[in-house]
Each structure stands twice: as structure tokens, then as C-alpha cells.
Length: 361
Image 1 (cartoon, rainbow, N blue to C red):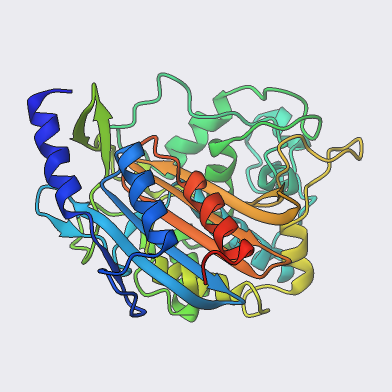
Image 2: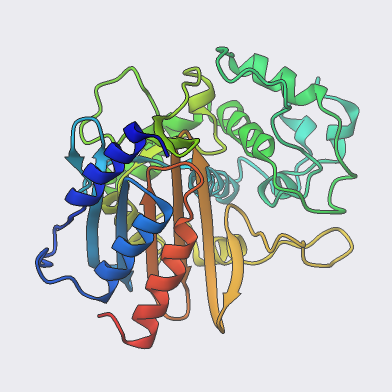
């Protein structure tokens, strides 16, 4: 580590403190605080926001460390992080809203919405895009993250990439599949998918700080994203504005907003219970077998130490995020971090274990 890098981390280590909107005393760290501090130091993460809720009720909302290292701004429950792919669950919810309204069919061919698309898209269904079983791939290695694209440009780019396998026969995680779902939402509603999310999800739930990313706008409480380069902390790399607005995960949110989201998922405010259950069930391939990714619609479905969990991670522009919902235990843990390659799932798993075992309350 360089001397300069050491100085950054010496300052960071000296001021890691926790804040809470729920009255947790910073001078009386409990087991969760002790774990979070130690894991932050081990992973060298500047800042973390932690949410724990039971049955939709917040029992812990805390910030640790720094939202902005240069300005020494601490993370608080109101601090806004970038979502990464945690944003996919909102895209999937929007699609399912339109399915319930009869405006989209899960078995619809993609060519219904894009009739000039390649012939191979005729076999691709909305269901398969939602579950990463459509044969779509990821951004090509030569994709220019610093170029501005129109939605038409992005559609042409996706159309040029051959399917990796016949639709419905395998599973592979695809950001381009969810990007395309955003275009479908626009096609069906006449609205940019982010506006649809704002009108139908964020606004009604009171998720006042959740929105599409915009680096140009003045956004109160926005955290900075970081990465480690040869052991030295650096700012996130810049990408173009349109690359930061696609439906594969380009949101700002805070743990307080995600508390509102979690609470809504216990209700039918947004979707019928049958639709939510479908999203939280491992999607099947055309041969009837469950997909190998354990993926539903916008969520991974896992079993962890005997507990049924629906979860998702996110990674984007110096941010790593995790939401884990222990369905039968009615426990949710959300961890937002501002360091590329951090492991928020480690935090979420351990914190959940503490609450499930009674070591934390």
C-alpha cells in the first residue's frame, strides 16, 4: 500500500462510527455493530448502510463509516446508494403489473413488441427474459460505457448479439435481457420505464428518494462510489448518462426507502399474492426442470442453513448491494456498500444469522 493510501485508511479507521434513526447508542456497540465494523475493516469498505426489518417493521436502520471520503460525510439511514442489479426486482414488478392488467403476456413472443427483431426472437418469451432463460447474454466486451445511446441504439445492439442457446433450454444471467424488458415497458405504456416505476411503485409507496440515476442532478445525501486500485482508494469510473438509466439496475435508493419496499411485499399494494409467489418461485425450463440459477423473476431463490430466502445482489459504479428476505422467518436484511468488489452478502448472511439465533434483537 502506498503512503497516500495508508493515510486514507488511517483517517477512515479513526472515524468509523455508526448512526441510527432508531436510537441505537454509538458508544455501546452490540454484536451486530462489532461484526459490521470488523468486516468493513477486513474488506476495506468506506461506508455501509444496514437495514433489518421483521414483518415489514424496521428494527435496525444504521449507517457506518463514510458516504464521502473526501468530505468526511458519514453514512446515515437517509444516505443514497446506487442499486446495481437489486434494481431488477423493480423492473420485474413493473412487468408483472402490466401482466395483471392484461397488457403483457408472460408467454408473449418478443417479436410481438419488436416485429423487426431477428427471427430467433420469435421463440423468446417475456417469461424467459424475466428468468434469464431466454438465451440473451451480457454487454459485449467492446461495449463503450462512455458513449451515449438512444433506446433505439440499445435495441439494435442487443438484436445483433446471437442467442447463446435456444430459449428456455438453459440459464445464464443476462443484463441485456432486463435492459430489453425496460424497452418492452416503454413500448407498452408509452412511458420511459423509470417514469413508470416512479408513478406506480416509488411514489405510491413513499419511496421518496428512489429514482433513476442522474449524476447531473443535485441529489441530497448521495454517497460516492469507490474502488481499490493497487491497494489505493479511487473514485468510481464514469459512465455515460444513458448507460446509467437502463432497466437492468440503474437506481438510487436508501435503506429507509427499501424498508418501505419490504413492507409493501407483505401486502397486495402492488401485485396480487399469486404474482409475488410466481416471482419468488424458481422458473422452469421448457423441459419442466427448474433453472440452474435458482432464479424466479428478478429474484434468486435460495435455501440458507435451512431457511427459505429470496434475495438479490447488485454491483455498479463503485457500489455493491444486497437484499435478503427470509420469507418464512419474516426477516429482511439489506446491506448497501460503496466499494466495488465488496461482499455485502457476507454481511447480510451473518447479520441474519445473528437475528435468527437470538444473538441480536
